[in-house]
Amino acid sequence: MESRKRVLPPEVLMEEYRELLQQEEIEALPLIISGNSMSPFLIHGRDTVYLSRLTRPARRGDVLLYRRTGGAYILHRVYRVERDSYTMVGDAQAVLEPGIRPEQVIAVMTSALRKGKRQGPGCFWWEFFEKVWIRMVPVRSGVRRAYTVIARMFRRR
Image (cartoon, rainbow, N blue to C red):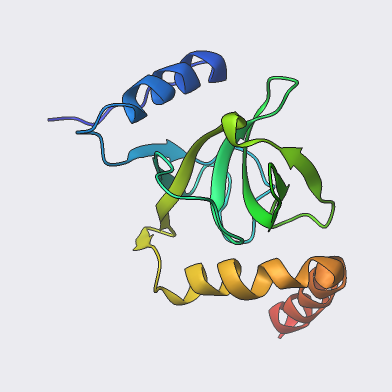
């Protein structure tokens, strides 16, 4: 059987995901990454995330799919859990997005197909981004600049 990709407008796709995630027999739904806000962990067009309904309170480091009040669908990491909201941030970002309410959350990322390999809790890169990179938000831009400079130096050799 040949595998086909279907491209749907985000509003249509996310409504279908919302409905499917309410069904008990659905364990996880795949979604190909679109956009660069979750790099370097997840890369646009290369990686696929697997989304499930959130059955427990979200924790710092969780990656949630949510809908902004303006209508955009976003996949970002929980930076801070407050009493009635979350503060979110993309892995490629240093600007925090406070005030995301639990009812805006559609799903949680439970695993990812990254560089062709399945990754989930317990994998090195999963744990690094969930536990270490999330704590580096204030210095991320400097770390990324330093990495770029060092990578260029090694490429020249």
